[in-house]
Amino acid sequence: THTINKIAAGEVVERPCSVIKELVENSIDAKASSITLEIKQGGIDFIRVTDNGVGIPKEEVEVAFLRHATSKIETAEDLQKVLTLGFRGEALASIAAVSHVELLTKTSQDLTGKRLEVSGGKIGISEEVACPNGTTFMMRHLFYNVPARKEFLGSSSSEGAKITDYISRLALAHPEISFKYIQNNKLLFTTSGNHDLTQAVLQVYGKEAAKNVMPLYDEEEGITCTGLLGNTLLTRANRNYEHFFINGRTIKSTLLQRAVEDAYKTLVMVGKFPFVLLHLTLDPATIDVNVHPTKMQVRFREEERIYQMVYKAITKELRKNHL
Ligand code: ADP
Ligand code: MG
Image 1: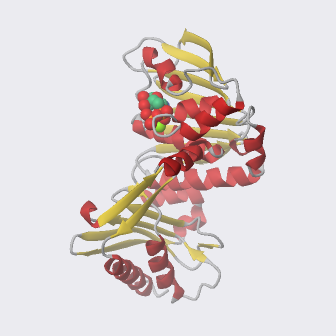
Image 2: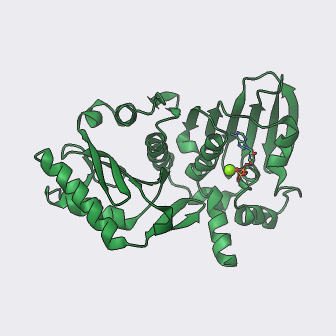
Protein backbone atom coordinates (compact mmCIF):
# COMPACT_ATOMS: atom_id res chain seq x y z
CA THR A 1 0.00 0.00 0.00
CA HIS A 2 2.95 2.29 0.51
CA THR A 3 3.67 2.38 -3.20
CA ILE A 4 0.01 2.80 -4.00
CA ASN A 5 -0.21 5.80 -1.65
CA LYS A 6 2.81 7.35 -3.28
CA ILE A 7 1.41 6.96 -6.75
CA ALA A 8 -1.99 8.24 -5.71
CA ALA A 9 -0.50 11.22 -3.91
CA GLY A 10 1.69 12.29 -6.80
CA GLU A 11 -1.44 12.59 -8.85
CA VAL A 12 -2.95 15.21 -6.57
CA VAL A 13 -0.85 17.78 -8.40
CA GLU A 14 -0.39 16.15 -11.73
CA ARG A 15 -1.77 18.81 -14.01
CA PRO A 16 -3.89 21.98 -13.94
CA CYS A 17 -7.09 19.96 -13.96
CA SER A 18 -6.07 18.08 -10.82
CA VAL A 19 -5.37 21.38 -9.08
CA ILE A 20 -8.82 22.60 -10.07
CA LYS A 21 -10.42 19.41 -8.86
CA GLU A 22 -8.91 19.90 -5.41
CA LEU A 23 -9.86 23.58 -5.25
CA VAL A 24 -13.41 23.13 -6.45
CA GLU A 25 -13.96 20.19 -4.14
CA ASN A 26 -12.82 22.40 -1.27
CA SER A 27 -15.40 24.97 -2.36
CA ILE A 28 -18.11 22.34 -2.40
CA ASP A 29 -16.97 21.09 1.02
CA ALA A 30 -17.24 24.70 2.17
CA LYS A 31 -20.94 24.62 1.18
CA ALA A 32 -20.60 27.18 -1.58
CA SER A 33 -23.76 27.79 -3.62
CA SER A 34 -21.82 29.69 -6.23
CA ILE A 35 -18.39 28.87 -7.69
CA THR A 36 -16.49 30.75 -10.37
CA LEU A 37 -13.59 29.12 -12.19
CA GLU A 38 -11.31 31.20 -14.32
CA ILE A 39 -8.33 29.84 -16.25
CA LYS A 40 -5.73 31.13 -18.68
CA GLN A 41 -3.48 29.10 -20.95
CA GLY A 42 -5.10 25.81 -20.02
CA GLY A 43 -4.67 26.58 -16.33
CA ILE A 44 -0.89 26.35 -16.58
CA ASP A 45 -0.40 30.10 -16.22
CA PHE A 46 -3.45 31.03 -14.21
CA ILE A 47 -6.26 29.48 -12.20
CA ARG A 48 -8.73 31.33 -10.02
CA VAL A 49 -11.50 29.70 -8.04
CA THR A 50 -13.91 31.98 -6.21
CA ASP A 51 -16.59 30.67 -3.89
CA ASN A 52 -19.17 32.00 -1.46
CA GLY A 53 -18.59 29.22 1.04
CA VAL A 54 -17.86 29.37 4.76
CA GLY A 55 -14.33 30.74 4.35
CA ILE A 56 -11.29 29.92 6.45
CA PRO A 57 -10.94 31.42 9.93
CA LYS A 58 -7.96 33.82 9.96
CA GLU A 59 -5.89 31.82 12.41
CA GLU A 60 -6.25 28.67 10.29
CA VAL A 61 -5.18 30.06 6.96
CA GLU A 62 -1.47 29.46 7.28
CA VAL A 63 -1.97 26.10 8.91
CA ALA A 64 -4.02 24.97 5.92
CA PHE A 65 -0.98 25.54 3.75
CA LEU A 66 1.78 24.43 6.01
CA ARG A 67 0.54 21.00 6.82
CA HIS A 68 3.30 19.59 4.75
CA ALA A 69 5.49 22.49 3.83
CA THR A 70 6.75 23.14 7.33
CA SER A 71 10.35 22.91 6.27
CA LYS A 72 11.55 25.26 3.58
CA ILE A 73 11.61 23.80 0.15
CA GLU A 74 15.13 24.20 -1.09
CA THR A 75 16.19 21.03 -2.81
CA ALA A 76 14.71 18.86 -5.50
CA GLU A 77 14.29 16.10 -2.92
CA ASP A 78 12.19 18.38 -0.74
CA LEU A 79 9.97 19.13 -3.69
CA GLN A 80 9.68 15.52 -4.62
CA LYS A 81 8.64 14.76 -1.05
CA VAL A 82 5.83 17.26 -1.19
CA LEU A 83 4.71 16.04 -4.58
CA THR A 84 4.62 12.42 -3.59
CA LEU A 85 3.53 12.66 0.03
CA GLY A 86 0.86 15.25 -0.46
CA PHE A 87 -2.24 13.16 -0.15
CA ARG A 88 -5.61 13.90 1.45
CA GLY A 89 -5.48 16.97 3.62
CA GLU A 90 -2.39 18.11 1.79
CA ALA A 91 -3.80 19.53 -1.40
CA LEU A 92 -3.25 23.20 -0.62
CA ALA A 93 0.27 22.57 0.60
CA SER A 94 1.08 20.48 -2.46
CA ILE A 95 -0.28 23.07 -4.89
CA ALA A 96 1.47 25.95 -3.14
CA ALA A 97 4.76 24.03 -3.23
CA VAL A 98 4.85 24.03 -7.02
CA SER A 99 3.31 27.38 -7.98
CA HIS A 100 2.64 30.95 -6.86
CA VAL A 101 -0.52 31.04 -4.83
CA GLU A 102 -2.67 33.81 -3.44
CA LEU A 103 -5.57 33.23 -1.11
CA LEU A 104 -8.28 35.63 -0.02
CA THR A 105 -10.75 34.40 2.52
CA LYS A 106 -13.29 35.58 5.06
CA THR A 107 -15.84 33.86 7.27
CA SER A 108 -19.19 35.47 8.03
CA GLN A 109 -18.18 35.73 11.70
CA ASP A 110 -15.17 37.90 10.94
CA LEU A 111 -15.31 41.56 10.04
CA THR A 112 -12.17 41.43 7.94
CA GLY A 113 -10.62 38.71 5.87
CA LYS A 114 -7.14 37.50 5.23
CA ARG A 115 -4.88 37.61 2.21
CA LEU A 116 -1.94 35.25 2.00
CA GLU A 117 0.71 34.69 -0.63
CA VAL A 118 2.67 31.46 -0.86
CA SER A 119 5.35 30.78 -3.46
CA GLY A 120 7.14 27.52 -3.89
CA GLY A 121 5.93 26.51 -0.44
CA LYS A 122 7.20 29.66 1.26
CA ILE A 123 4.79 31.97 2.99
CA GLY A 124 5.08 35.53 1.75
CA ILE A 125 2.71 38.39 2.43
CA SER A 126 0.08 37.70 5.05
CA GLU A 127 -2.29 40.55 5.83
CA GLU A 128 -5.76 41.50 6.95
CA VAL A 129 -7.94 42.84 4.16
CA ALA A 130 -11.52 43.76 3.42
CA CYS A 131 -13.15 41.12 1.23
CA PRO A 132 -16.49 39.38 0.74
CA ASN A 133 -17.42 36.21 2.63
CA GLY A 134 -15.99 33.10 1.02
CA THR A 135 -12.70 32.14 -0.53
CA THR A 136 -10.75 33.11 -3.62
CA PHE A 137 -7.81 30.93 -4.51
CA MET A 138 -5.47 32.10 -7.22
CA MET A 139 -2.67 30.04 -8.67
CA ARG A 140 -0.03 31.20 -11.14
CA HIS A 141 2.65 29.38 -13.09
CA LEU A 142 2.18 25.75 -12.20
CA PHE A 143 5.46 23.83 -11.88
CA TYR A 144 7.54 27.01 -12.36
CA ASN A 145 10.06 25.40 -10.00
CA VAL A 146 9.78 21.84 -11.34
CA PRO A 147 10.70 22.04 -15.03
CA ALA A 148 10.64 18.26 -15.43
CA ARG A 149 6.99 18.20 -14.41
CA LYS A 150 6.13 21.15 -16.55
CA GLU A 151 7.54 19.46 -19.59
CA PHE A 152 5.19 16.57 -18.96
CA LEU A 153 2.13 18.79 -19.37
CA GLY A 154 0.21 18.89 -22.61
CA SER A 155 -0.33 22.00 -24.70
CA SER A 156 -2.44 24.71 -23.12
CA SER A 157 -5.31 23.78 -25.40
CA SER A 158 -5.26 20.10 -24.41
CA GLU A 159 -4.97 20.98 -20.70
CA GLY A 160 -7.80 23.47 -21.20
CA ALA A 161 -9.96 20.83 -22.86
CA LYS A 162 -9.53 18.52 -19.87
CA ILE A 163 -10.62 21.31 -17.56
CA THR A 164 -13.63 22.18 -19.68
CA ASP A 165 -14.71 18.55 -19.65
CA TYR A 166 -14.19 18.28 -15.89
CA ILE A 167 -16.06 21.47 -14.95
CA SER A 168 -18.90 20.66 -17.38
CA ARG A 169 -19.38 17.30 -15.71
CA LEU A 170 -19.20 18.85 -12.29
CA ALA A 171 -21.82 21.47 -13.15
CA LEU A 172 -24.18 18.68 -14.24
CA ALA A 173 -23.32 16.65 -11.15
CA HIS A 174 -24.28 19.64 -8.99
CA PRO A 175 -27.31 21.35 -10.51
CA GLU A 176 -27.85 22.87 -7.04
CA ILE A 177 -24.68 24.97 -7.37
CA SER A 178 -24.29 27.91 -9.71
CA PHE A 179 -21.08 27.57 -11.71
CA LYS A 180 -19.42 30.18 -13.84
CA TYR A 181 -16.58 29.14 -16.12
CA ILE A 182 -14.27 31.64 -17.79
CA GLN A 183 -11.46 30.64 -20.13
CA ASN A 184 -8.96 33.20 -21.44
CA ASN A 185 -11.31 36.05 -20.46
CA LYS A 186 -14.21 34.46 -22.30
CA LEU A 187 -17.30 33.31 -20.40
CA LEU A 188 -17.96 29.73 -21.50
CA PHE A 189 -20.98 29.02 -19.32
CA THR A 190 -23.00 29.94 -16.29
CA THR A 191 -25.43 27.58 -14.62
CA SER A 192 -28.26 28.85 -12.47
CA GLY A 193 -27.94 26.37 -9.62
CA ASN A 194 -31.71 25.90 -9.45
CA HIS A 195 -31.64 22.06 -9.45
CA ASP A 196 -33.04 21.86 -12.99
CA LEU A 197 -30.92 19.32 -14.84
CA THR A 198 -32.22 19.97 -18.35
CA GLN A 199 -31.59 23.65 -17.89
CA ALA A 200 -28.07 22.88 -16.69
CA VAL A 201 -27.50 20.84 -19.87
CA LEU A 202 -28.69 23.80 -21.89
CA GLN A 203 -26.40 26.16 -20.04
CA VAL A 204 -23.33 23.91 -20.22
CA TYR A 205 -23.66 22.29 -23.64
CA GLY A 206 -25.99 24.71 -25.41
CA LYS A 207 -29.47 24.84 -26.93
CA GLU A 208 -28.94 22.05 -29.44
CA ALA A 209 -27.93 19.64 -26.70
CA ALA A 210 -30.91 20.50 -24.51
CA LYS A 211 -33.30 20.01 -27.46
CA ASN A 212 -32.00 16.50 -28.02
CA VAL A 213 -32.28 14.99 -24.56
CA MET A 214 -35.15 13.09 -22.99
CA PRO A 215 -35.73 12.09 -19.39
CA LEU A 216 -34.93 8.61 -18.17
CA TYR A 217 -36.75 6.92 -15.35
CA ASP A 218 -36.88 3.32 -14.25
CA GLU A 219 -37.16 1.51 -10.96
CA GLU A 220 -36.95 -2.04 -9.71
CA GLU A 221 -36.43 -3.63 -6.34
CA GLY A 222 -34.80 -0.74 -4.59
CA ILE A 223 -32.76 0.52 -7.52
CA THR A 224 -33.75 3.66 -9.35
CA CYS A 225 -32.29 4.76 -12.59
CA THR A 226 -32.89 8.40 -13.55
CA GLY A 227 -31.29 11.05 -15.68
CA LEU A 228 -31.20 12.26 -19.27
CA LEU A 229 -30.59 10.47 -22.54
CA GLY A 230 -29.49 12.06 -25.77
CA ASN A 231 -30.84 11.09 -29.16
CA THR A 232 -28.78 10.20 -32.23
CA LEU A 233 -28.21 13.86 -33.08
CA LEU A 234 -26.33 14.33 -29.85
CA THR A 235 -23.16 12.27 -30.01
CA ARG A 236 -19.44 12.69 -29.66
CA ALA A 237 -16.40 10.89 -30.96
CA ASN A 238 -15.17 10.56 -27.34
CA ARG A 239 -16.89 9.73 -24.07
CA ASN A 240 -17.11 13.30 -22.79
CA TYR A 241 -20.90 13.11 -22.99
CA GLU A 242 -21.16 10.08 -20.71
CA HIS A 243 -21.90 10.96 -17.08
CA PHE A 244 -22.38 8.39 -14.34
CA PHE A 245 -23.47 8.96 -10.77
CA ILE A 246 -24.17 6.63 -7.91
CA ASN A 247 -26.09 7.92 -4.93
CA GLY A 248 -25.35 11.44 -6.07
CA ARG A 249 -21.61 11.08 -6.58
CA THR A 250 -19.67 11.11 -9.83
CA ILE A 251 -18.13 7.74 -10.56
CA LYS A 252 -16.36 5.79 -13.24
CA SER A 253 -17.62 2.37 -14.18
CA THR A 254 -16.79 0.33 -17.22
CA LEU A 255 -19.84 -1.81 -16.50
CA LEU A 256 -22.23 1.15 -16.79
CA GLN A 257 -20.34 2.34 -19.83
CA ARG A 258 -20.86 -1.04 -21.47
CA ALA A 259 -24.54 -1.27 -20.55
CA VAL A 260 -25.21 2.19 -21.95
CA GLU A 261 -23.20 1.77 -25.12
CA ASP A 262 -24.69 -1.67 -25.80
CA ALA A 263 -28.17 -0.20 -25.47
CA TYR A 264 -27.32 2.53 -27.95
CA LYS A 265 -25.75 0.06 -30.34
CA THR A 266 -29.23 -0.89 -31.47
CA LEU A 267 -29.37 2.62 -32.95
CA VAL A 268 -26.33 2.01 -35.11
CA MET A 269 -23.94 4.61 -33.91
CA VAL A 270 -20.66 3.48 -35.34
CA GLY A 271 -17.66 5.24 -33.85
CA LYS A 272 -19.83 7.60 -31.86
CA PHE A 273 -20.71 7.84 -28.19
CA PRO A 274 -24.07 8.92 -26.82
CA PHE A 275 -25.03 11.67 -24.40
CA VAL A 276 -26.04 9.98 -21.16
CA LEU A 277 -26.50 11.35 -17.71
CA LEU A 278 -27.23 8.37 -15.55
CA HIS A 279 -28.04 8.53 -11.85
CA LEU A 280 -28.29 5.22 -10.05
CA THR A 281 -29.69 5.17 -6.55
CA LEU A 282 -29.15 1.93 -4.71
CA ASP A 283 -28.27 0.36 -1.40
CA PRO A 284 -24.64 1.35 -0.65
CA ALA A 285 -24.10 -2.11 0.79
CA THR A 286 -24.32 -3.55 -2.73
CA ILE A 287 -21.29 -1.68 -4.04
CA ASP A 288 -17.57 -1.50 -3.30
CA VAL A 289 -16.14 1.96 -3.62
CA ASN A 290 -12.48 2.47 -4.31
CA VAL A 291 -11.73 6.09 -3.58
CA HIS A 292 -8.68 7.44 -5.34
CA PRO A 293 -7.63 11.08 -5.20
CA THR A 294 -8.44 11.62 -8.83
CA LYS A 295 -11.40 9.35 -9.41
CA MET A 296 -13.95 7.13 -7.81
CA GLN A 297 -14.23 3.63 -9.13
CA VAL A 298 -17.17 1.44 -8.23
CA ARG A 299 -17.62 -2.30 -8.25
CA PHE A 300 -21.08 -3.76 -8.11
CA ARG A 301 -21.85 -6.89 -6.10
CA GLU A 302 -24.47 -7.89 -8.64
CA GLU A 303 -22.88 -6.85 -11.90
CA GLU A 304 -25.20 -8.79 -14.19
CA ARG A 305 -28.30 -7.40 -12.53
CA ILE A 306 -27.11 -3.80 -12.79
CA TYR A 307 -26.06 -4.28 -16.40
CA GLN A 308 -29.46 -5.73 -17.32
CA MET A 309 -31.37 -3.04 -15.52
CA VAL A 310 -29.50 -0.15 -17.11
CA TYR A 311 -29.56 -1.77 -20.52
CA LYS A 312 -33.31 -2.36 -20.31
CA ALA A 313 -34.12 1.07 -18.90
CA ILE A 314 -32.30 2.76 -21.74
CA THR A 315 -33.55 0.57 -24.61
CA LYS A 316 -37.11 1.00 -23.33
CA GLU A 317 -36.78 4.76 -23.31
CA LEU A 318 -35.14 4.89 -26.72
CA ARG A 319 -37.87 2.70 -28.23
CA LYS A 320 -40.60 4.77 -26.65
CA ASN A 321 -39.15 7.75 -28.46
CA HIS A 322 -38.95 5.78 -31.72
CA LEU A 323 -35.21 6.00 -31.87
P1 ADP B 1 -8.59 18.81 2.81
O1 ADP B 1 -9.60 19.42 1.90
O2 ADP B 1 -8.37 17.37 2.50
O3 ADP B 1 -8.83 19.07 4.27
P2 ADP B 1 -6.87 20.76 1.60
O4 ADP B 1 -5.39 20.90 1.56
O5 ADP B 1 -7.59 20.66 0.32
O6 ADP B 1 -7.18 19.52 2.51
O7 ADP B 1 -7.46 21.99 2.41
C1 ADP B 1 -6.97 22.29 3.68
C2 ADP B 1 -8.02 22.98 4.53
O8 ADP B 1 -8.20 24.33 4.09
C3 ADP B 1 -9.38 22.37 4.47
O9 ADP B 1 -9.52 21.34 5.41
C4 ADP B 1 -10.27 23.54 4.80
O10 ADP B 1 -10.35 23.71 6.20
C5 ADP B 1 -9.54 24.72 4.26
N1 ADP B 1 -10.05 25.14 2.94
C6 ADP B 1 -9.46 24.93 1.74
N2 ADP B 1 -10.17 25.48 0.74
C7 ADP B 1 -11.26 26.04 1.31
C8 ADP B 1 -12.39 26.78 0.80
N3 ADP B 1 -12.55 27.03 -0.50
N4 ADP B 1 -13.31 27.22 1.70
C9 ADP B 1 -13.16 26.98 3.03
N5 ADP B 1 -12.12 26.29 3.56
C10 ADP B 1 -11.17 25.83 2.72
MG1 MG C 1 -9.26 19.38 -0.17
